[in-house]
Image 1: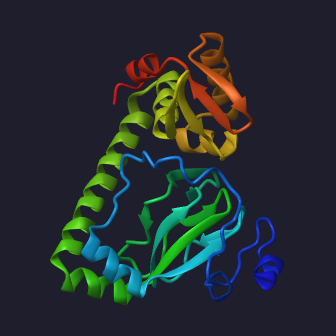
Image 2: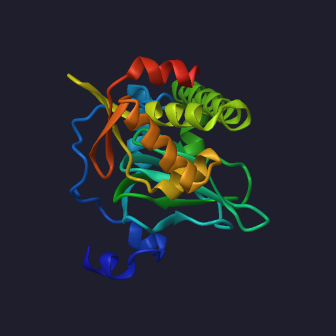
Image 3: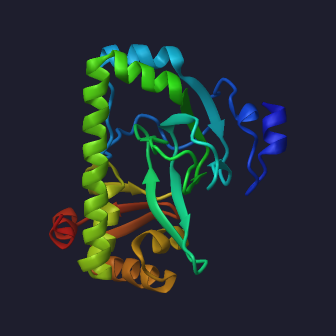
Length: 249
């Protein structure tokens, strides 16, 4: 991996050929934490077997781009470990983070010849990369895999609809409550643990808020004792029912 690490410096994009190496086990958040992503889909056993034959594990270091706007649409990806952001740059230069990708999420399904967004690793990530033509062949040949993909597309559409509601109708407090609950990683005796590896700037660009508003809202949640800070990237939701009522998804 020495050559990969030499190329993949912070903010620099490695060539796909360098990314496509057998994945080691990098140190990160405990893998024992269950994935509670609402849209995550675990393929059916038959589909998983077929996909495993055509997939290749790759690594992406924190701060590097897996895809960039304008890249050819030649592969489908599944997140195995880590968190990524889907980034679009608006015509006026502003950045919008459309999605955060979590373990179990697929991306790269666009029918366009080129990708219209970038996908960047927020943490060190392990992905599985499938050649698009082989992935399509599996879906066409296996009805169970096709149904699984259809369910995945429906859940992603539902997530997009929830995001439209969040941006169009919810207040800053309601947006933050929804966001925190979407990153719940496990139940503890004192509340729900939320791991947020992204910056507050990322959160602001995702929720359509300013960094100052994000900071003020988190401070308000702490003052109300709805949450407590465990460390710089971990929050404990101590009043989950209150946040659920605010989110009202």
